[in-house]
Amino acid sequence: MLERRQRLRQSDAAPMDEETRRYVQCQVMSAGRIVVFMSGAGYTDGQKNSVSLISDLVGIHVEKASVTEPAATGTLNGRTFTIQNEGVKSLFKVVDPEARTIATYNSGECAAVIKTIKGCRVYYFGIPVNAGLGFWGALLEDAGVRTYVGGLRERDYVAVGGGIIGLYSVDGGEKTIKPLKGAPRKVMMRPFATRYFDLDNGMDRMGEEGMHNVR
Image: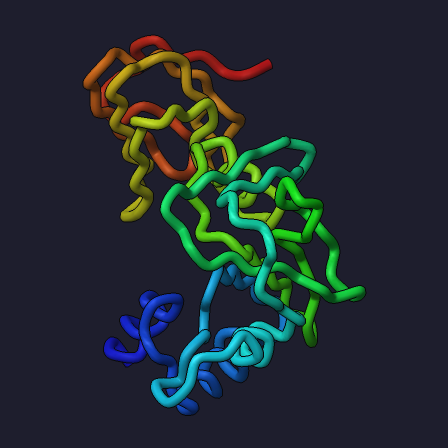
């Protein structure tokens, strides 16, 4: 299982054999799940390289894009985002009337879509995503993923587990702690500070310095 997961994480650059493809389609892309594919996921099976292998894997019709500039713009959950990935040689576009476009290349070709396939919500990006924190926040919100801290910046780090929300911030600033049960709570972080909050109620495990409930 570990070996298979490692192959899946590398699947946009490494061969994906038939066994792994079946695993993705039958186990990963099951009803109720959300799956994100990028660029050349499944482009090679070790014997041949083909865009059709991408289409077969992700369930979305993909073709080679004519555009050469590795940049795309789009909107997710009401937020506009830009993806730029200098040095990328192969770009892919989507030609699928059943998919909803969320990003386009400067040429107007479709760069990214969302499509529901047998109850699975699939995101496909024809360009490797190299974007800021705002994009990832929008993607998580659009996908309905539960988040625990708001107001994050590029050099903030969050770890959740063991009943704790851990937050480390390089630049500091105001954050919003979003516990499982209690009301959201504002906290002012100092630069290069680490703090721990209760997962259920959001209380600071090391004291109430600089915290107040959101009204």
